[in-house]
Image (tube, rainbow, N blue to C red):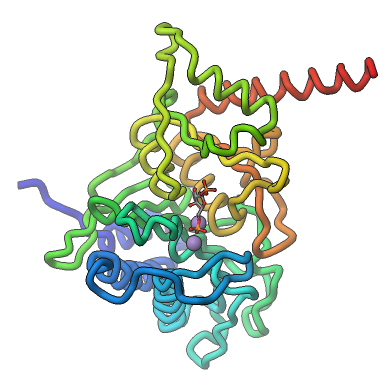
Length: 346
Ligand code: AHG
Ligand code: MN
Ligand code: MN
């Protein structure tokens, strides 16, 4: 029988490859693993436990918090605080960053940014949701208080990032800048096993994922790309197939395995799109790049190069297989050039 490697074993083995590694990440992953198992348990009895529905509160972004948003946020926060390596977290569900100021966390070197439940609107209807996390080394002195700037680092500075997908099975997928590996949870013994070593984004694909209900509001470059996806051309495998779950983690995970593109562009009422740079786009962008894909704002800027100015900052987001990213960007560039020409003529 094939020898299975657990997530814990894998993280330790990876650490041994890097002489300077301290074992810190292995402990932080221990906390993420524990909280993920607790969330897995709640999600899997969502229909019968009192965990579905709204919590009756709004988060800082004016979104209805679901009970599971609140539950997951608390569990990740508690698990990360309890190991003493993290000095603070920033979460979609918290207006400000949270400092861990217990004796245990004094001198801790890392900060974690997290979307505790991604795709919350899917909880009550039994559709896949996820958790997204991003880990940085703090910039401020380890013996002082954690500062906002510790969280406002560009994605290129991430030391680890990943997601947990609670789908037909529960999986944890992560990178530390040395490729992407996926682990499937065996609930009978409570262990994540390496099931998807060295994940690679196909160079091309035939899935496009976008909320087409917003079509009327999109930039003409985006509209033209969507039409291109729908045109008949067997030589390029078109028309593509449209798949949109409404959970970024699930949409991205499917496209990573099968080849595809996901985009949430800016449009009139949402000039910066909807997705949050720090705890949604940056970790997913790094995973995409590490798997051989690409992620930009659709306007020529690499997501990981954006210098954040706010905790809950949004950005338009385009991510996926490289040849599909090239195509969509070509449409965006052409449209911008057309608009410039029209402005010159006017
Ligand atoms: P969250 O549940 O953490 O607020 O994130 C929801 C995000 C993302 O997961 C998803 O891709 C997108 O919102 C869906 O938005 P629309 O319903 O506007 O398509
Ligand atoms: Mn989200
Ligand atoms: Mn969320």
